[in-house]
Image 1 (spheres, rainbow, N blue to C red):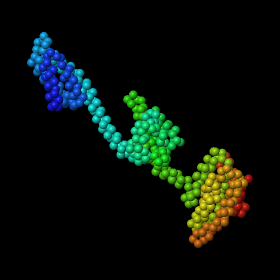
Image 2: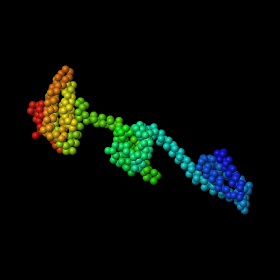
Image 3: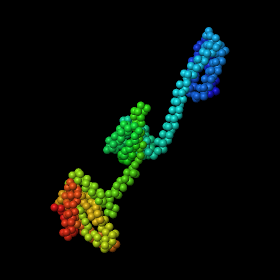
Image 4: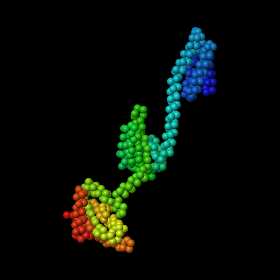
Length: 393
């Protein structure tokens, strides 16, 4: 401030000390520079220096007003007009510069906070333009995706998404651009730098300018591979029989319903272990559980990969044999029945042999009709003396 005021005093003394050359604009330029490069207090001090030095020289008969054929009060009035005009012209400039300075400070502070969040967040923060090209991506992408931010910027975001999810991601991007203030969420598989697909969740929100025109989308991207594994494990647990490891009743009927909708041809069989209650009564429930596991093991090894075996009741099992005619289905079920009857289950020194009765029916458009036909064939097999196969009429 001291240097600025000294320079202002010198400039004012020069401008008002020379009467032959009009230099009244020079102090105004000096104050404009002060407004741009200095603070408000310095600018006000320079204005005061202009008023004191310029006013004093005017009263002393120097300056641009000295050559005018006017009285001293009139010359002083002209100086006041000059000073007032200068102040009125510079006040808007000073206000605009002050607002600009505040905006700059707020922007700097906001950018510092933004960088602190993005650089230390475990999530990926990504900004794309309206076409989906990556404009910015936070450093955390190097940990989650094994990419460096530099190699991703400029590429389209879809280049890093598994192709089958392109349409979903593109749709979410377009919805965000068309919906100011709304956030959209999407799960998808993305490709890491090593080529491994990985589950991510993105929350997308468009950014708009003052005219309400979207100029990009900001996404918060989170690794959800652990969550997806847990969901898959829970889904597996919900559809698996814990004792045998086979699909349970719910999973079997879902597959049966799906096959009916698709119009899949094939066979359905219902198998019941003969006199199973005697095993539990004679050897205990642990022995009964061991027999059930034996049947599950034999069924898995006997059936084809496309076939399905499920435990649908206590000692009751069901087979779904897609693309199989009755003759082939009869051969498969008879082989399973014979193998199980010949297999010994050993537990606690006991050797247990169990037989099974089977009912086989063709797969129709109505799952319940197919199941009822197989059940009827099962009862027919039991009436024939058990340990045999009966085919629905």
